[in-house]
Amino acid sequence: MTRRRFRASATLLPALLAAAPLSALPTMVRLGYPNCASCHIAPQGGGLLNAYGKGIDEAQSLRAGEYRPSGNPLVKALGWGGRITQDFRSVTLEQLSGGAGQPVLGLTRGRIMYRNATELGKGFRLSTVISAENKSAPRPALRYDLPVRPRAAYVGSALVSYRRGSHLEFSAGRDPLPNGINIPDQGLFVRSRNRMGYYDNPTQLKMFWWGKRYHINPYAFGPSGTEQRGQAESGGGGLAEFDLLGKGTTVVGMNLLHGRARFGRRTLIAPYVRLGFGKWGILAEHDITTRSAIQPAASRFRQSASLAQLFWAPREWLVAYFTGERLGVERPYREDLAAGKFELVARLASQVTVAIGARVQRNRLTGRYSQSVALQLAMKTVN
Image (cartoon, rainbow, N blue to C red; front, side, top):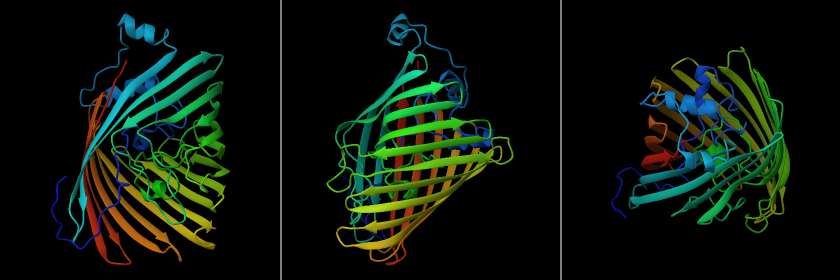
């Protein structure tokens, strides 16, 4: 561990700045893809790619080649004649973070994932994600909302799905909850403060219904069994979005959720937009969460989280991200945080992605700053 001191007045950055899988690409809205269903096997996105998605993935890399399925007989046999799509994925993060009066902390985090989607025929599919890591990265522990206790190895997703036709699918099992702009960074306020951290994978029953200009996703959820005592939450919600101009580049939507646990309740209203303009675009979301905490003390308060991200792709394989965030929490758990982040992501090949980023956060109540810099390498197998 490296130990030095930052000059800026700051506090140590929390561990929520964790390795985020470089997978889902909501920036594809700039090219006229209004949702994830075109490229991903699951319409929620963020998982394995279908054959079309693999072609896009390869074409948008520095190598800019053409995707060709493996001709290896062993690979074909393991793929059960094309019915099994699977890969191994690794994400490695090197990070330095700290603040004035605090030592700089160096962190190396590695995560390995096995992802599988098996087509059973007649529209049925089984899918799973199994992960292992050397260091965990739970979302912040709050007095009114404790995080899931992570494990060294865990099942992040286990679903059975049924697709009827080409635009309707039902899924049941453990999985991350749907969210609007679908940015994979779990450290962002709109995710970490809304129970959308890396280990938050509740049991769900959900429906996806989509078309050229719309995507509708109602869901009901219950505990995953990994929550801390009193934090097992059940509830329901729905996500709906619409492409205003019909060109796949002007998506507006709303995510609504209500959850109830023994120690508290929350109601989320989250409007969002995804806009694309050729080489650049904008992602924005504003979440308003009304919470009622029963323990440690009975209280009702509002939490708001805002995000605006400008992205620019000077090359198809190279994308720069400029992100601004704001978090506000009312008394008795008052918080007022603002943050900015820059990230540069390079897709060297369909198997290799490299990202470098820097983040600065200011506590507006104390005036203190905290900073971090990170280098991330993501690798996966492609068959």
